[in-house]
Length: 270
Ligand SMILES: NC(=O)c1ccc[n+]([C@@H]2O[C@H](COP(=O)([O-])OP(=O)(O)OC[C@H]3O[C@@H](n4cnc5c(N)ncnc54)[C@H](O)[C@@H]3O)[C@@H](O)[C@H]2O)c1
Image (cartoon, rainbow, N blue to C red; front, top):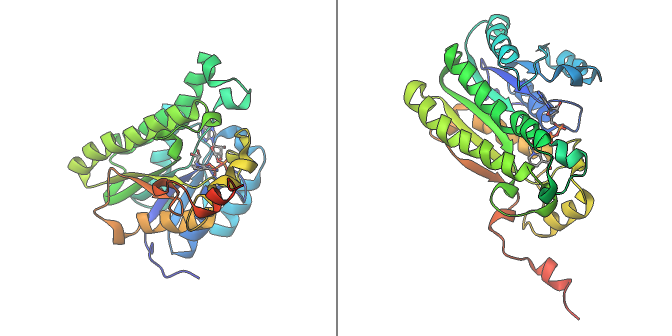
């Protein structure tokens, strides 16, 4: 049940692949809260067809766009304003992919073509979306743009591989663009650093099952679910968080500030 906290707001949501996707939950919650939005994903992801189910249940249109293509992004931004009948209030960038991870290339043995592609998809695409929105003057004042990230940007998680570097770049874009967009139009730009979550992208990381259990034991509140992440995104799209910008916001049950928990220590007792 919603409380209409996004009533009248228009948005663009990237990255809903299937029901597990964090973006899928955000779309469902945004719909419940009274927002209207366009759904988008890479043309190749459309083949699975699942996004059409979400479009139907939320009364949304789908516009395919490869987030690495400036042309596709420009078209998406312009068409979204036409479809939604005005400027945009919120954008969710929920996109991540590393070919090195997919192909099992070790961090010390990267294929740099793979690295560049992953960087483009996972990080530079965020700049492309922001730049296109600014050029087309597509955002309403106090609009809110979010990207999803992971704590491997700050600390080493060996199997997260080059995605750690991609996430550092992504978080830096949020700070830098957040400054310029704030000054120009009062638009807010933030990243949310989410707990490990069982999704298609998440489970691609080696040893993910063990890792999710470790993270659960290391978080005083336990791992945050995709739905809880969606709730946080909704609050960040709402007018209740107007002065939050250029931040990397941890949504991780306390993991990021925990040195060790009793539960983990206990595993080392004789
Ligand atoms: N699952 C986790 O453990 C976790 C934790 C922290 C942050 N995140 C981040 O959350 C975001 C969403 O991932 P998810 O876990 O919901 O997985 P997901 O696999 O459901 O979503 C990833 C999305 O990226 C899209 N994508 C890939 N290449 C694209 C391209 N060229 N153009 C447009 N879209 C493209 C995919 O189609 C997919 O919809 C990612 O940024 C991910 O890194 C995930």
